[in-house]
Image (cartoon, rainbow, N blue to C red):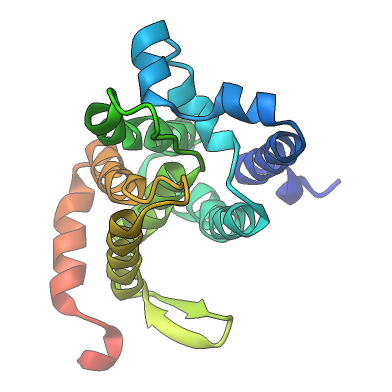
Amino acid sequence: MNTDYFTITNIIVVLTCLISYQAFQDSYKRNRLIFHPVTVKGQGEYFRFLTSGFIHADWIHLGVNMFVLWSFGNILESRYYPTFIGETWSIMAYLGLYFGGIVVSSIPSFIRYQNAPHYRALGASGGVSAVVFAIIFFAPWENLYLYALIPIPQILAGIGYLWYSWYMDKRGGDNIGHMAHFTGAIWGIFYTGFLNFDLFGRFITETLKGPSWFH
């Protein structure tokens, strides 16, 4: 049996796809899991900070988030975390990174919209962003490939991703928690750094060094 299929990342992707699909078919379930700050505050339903990360607005939203998680999460889980955090705690650290990113990234929206009945948000963007920026933290100038063809340094792609999130948050109207990308990114970097303080110095050195072709 190939255990490479049974990674934590792949299990999360499958569970998220299943729950999102069910929520597409059942509006009651969707409304029960969605992040709604007024309900969280008024009824103490704090579970919504986490459950909202298992549902998505549509197939495109789900597909993009899960593809990015699958692409980056498996690399982080198998290559970076065991090396820099240690084999013993790497799985627990990875779970804390992803699910912590989902929860923490909803805090600014809760503060901002706790008295706004119209506001709802959903999606795993905070957790996905945490994973993406954890990898950027390890290897800022390593290329990712847009459309599997165009090489882009990860740190530049990350900056573009955050700009897009800011723009879409200002535009609004799609129930997607775009500002969660910012909070998730911050969580991903500092959470990973506090697990291994040496990474802060390494990140600064690698970033200032620039890409390999620059030398």
